[in-house]
Length: 328
Image 1 (tube, rainbow, N blue to C red):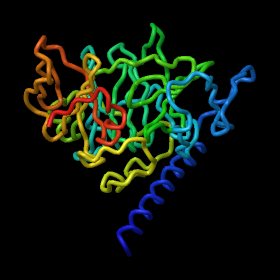
Image 2: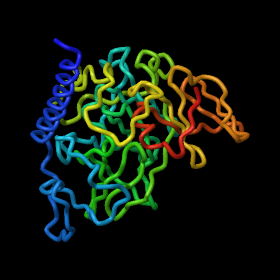
Image 3: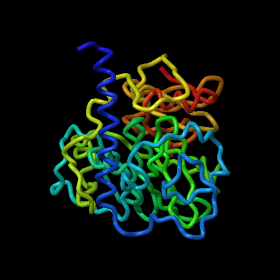
Image 4: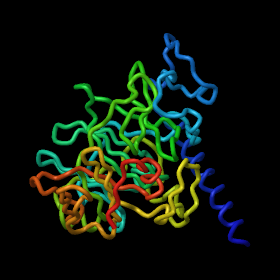
């Protein structure tokens, strides 16, 4: 079997797996909402016909021709709302599993990748602050945002569409908009241009999290949906340079799927290779020093933790050719 044939075979397999995730999701959705209100008068491009999205497509900051259907459809990958948490004694998470650690007002929570890969968004309230914990398997992008915009708490779902191979979230409500998970910005609909605030978190193995944060509760597999949380529908995807969905920019300076740590700061997007992050870095042409210490980031003007996130190289490079700075 030739290498070229194996690459195409793998790409086909990932597309089939994404479709299967969607089929499973559709079969287990609750009977709430998700239907297009009869009062909707928006003109919808043909590629979004029957999508169930109540979005004003006449308002957009991106080229709609670059938006692709990922297969599952709206809520085919079901975001979690009012999630259940359990103690570490009750949890059955392999030590090597990556988890997102979030703390606020003394409340500590862990969100394992083996659950996030099936749901991609968790709508939660941690220590009184509404947050959305997000993960796009196609981009390796783990990002936590505050869910309050203009003093309004927004609940998010998975639209089933992709922009630059990245998940497009949608805000639930009478009028919906599409949001780039990577950018944290509404890109289609009447909220176009509005942005989410990053919230600081750490990404570490469950084994390390248990040692460092023994009181943190763990997201339960009791989600209300039937999923194989011991399996990964994207298994093998990270081991190849091939992308399942195309992007507009090819930047070959680093391997496409290498994970970088990203710090948004004063209009810049600062990227540092995950395995080279620890230490002090001076931002070029500034007096700003950023210190990385085991996933905790601070700047030289204070001790407050800076928010950042993780993302594959190809995805970050696609979105940040204009304002990106790389620490290597």
